[in-house]
Image 1 (cartoon, rainbow over the protein chains, first blue to last red):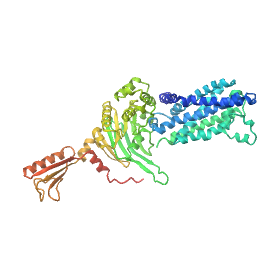
Image 2: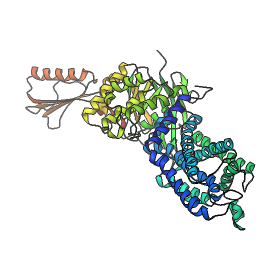
Image 3: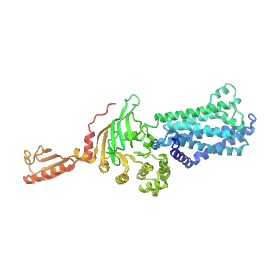
Image 4: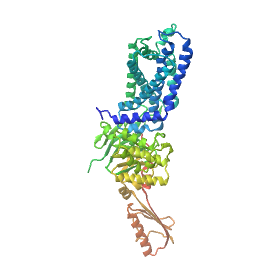
Length: 257
Length: 320
């Protein structure tokens, strides 16, 4: 126990979640990397070769942050949601609820493991991207922090989904029907400045636009949105997720009878 | 008298009604004290409130009233310290079936904040005859083995108080005997055990004290032997060779009656601890002395089950 934080409990959850990921290594790591490679082949190498530069950056390099974010969002959400949904589904959640574990320790364990998996995937994707396109990251440290921030926010969001869902269909619904479309329309493959009005204004209502542009700024120091706005919105989303989870554990919603 | 290991006072749990349905009272004003080192059996029919009561102590259910104290601490305030000393074996096979036995038990120990101790985990697995299966995935184990894994997980953090929720529900007779042996060993190690069951035989075999719960209310809590003495009965039927018109004065005693056709003497009485049997023997001796012939004696000692059935039958539903 360090400053009232039960490190052993958090570590136990964290390790168990990583073991679970290793058990499903194909689905957890290899599959998203393979999918991203296909995107690079289609959009980067095949189509990108016929595209002009975007803001002084080759099209192949331009889509790297967007593609990274595309995988990061879906994987963080999936990892965060499955980690807590599975024990709810099997009933094994009883052990967590009866253990001397606080909300903070639960989050560090589950969400920490989900973020770790996302970071491993991000590192592999960035390395893989080098095989297809040349790019340099202008602010590598800021890029790392931004990736950690986004992975944390969406792992927390996934955790909420895992608590909310009462079936596998609901678990998949939000990532497939909300996140994926928003990500594709959020400037992953283009700058929103390429859009004609009113679509450019409409795009500004898509929160993913801010995430993509925030990360793109750390890569190329160019963005459709001010970096401060992007960062502020990402932090606000993170805070909203933590507040929602704190409320869920406090009230026992979907957890305790 | 030492302080009880667990004190429950005025515990209430009301579930909100779904839709237009009225709220459901699962526990009503439950008072219960558990002594250190005992095996306490909580008996009750399905839906009596046994699992809700356990859930309230273990943190799975949020009580709507009352107070729970364990190890001298208030559960609401010192939940971390209290939970660290309680183990729970659930009724359902709630496990990650892809986990291995060793990893599942090691995880439970860590989750409850205990330092890693492979030696202790080995000890627990060996005691439950699981060591040979330590690397097996749980899905490969038989139902009985899985139940043992649940017990091993609950024991991984060396709890002082162990809840077993219907530990032998749905298991075969052999495995049930095996479970009873395991529970007995735990008692010998000083673990206080609270088990819920609707198998009366289980309570009769294992428990030091018995509590009966029905429709959310505790009806009775006492030593098993005391219950048997105070509520137990002996019933004996003497089939006579010839009909009697009345009970002879030498036989007259409380609890003895003559059947309508005069061909049987029926005794109902005793204290469940030998008193009834003595009365039956005396009646048999008197019949012989009086030369009243009889061809059969059917004697029956009331079991805990009879007592339990009498207690819970015809009880009204709790008004919500």
